[in-house]
Image (cartoon, rainbow, N blue to C red; front, side, top):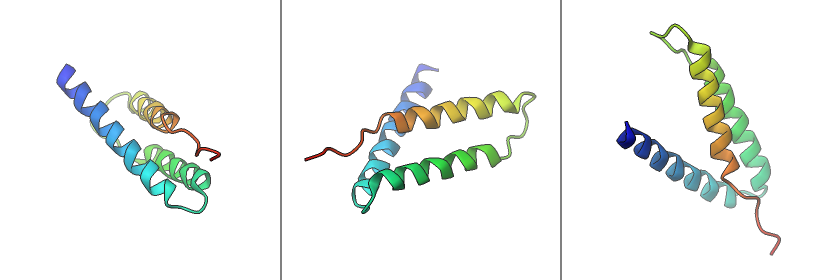
Length: 79
């Protein structure tokens, strides 16, 4: 289980870096990040979760993970 958690954290860090890199190349990085976050949340809300009794709990955990992922990103510096 620890190995799986470690791999998930590594994937989250990799994805966060990739999103930040793409955002930095945009004219309005904050708007890009906000729009991207909203799209990801819409996907999480609409994904079909099969084979579980309590799909809402899985969906809530996924939403929290998305929020955590985007909270790791800092706004662009004023320099």
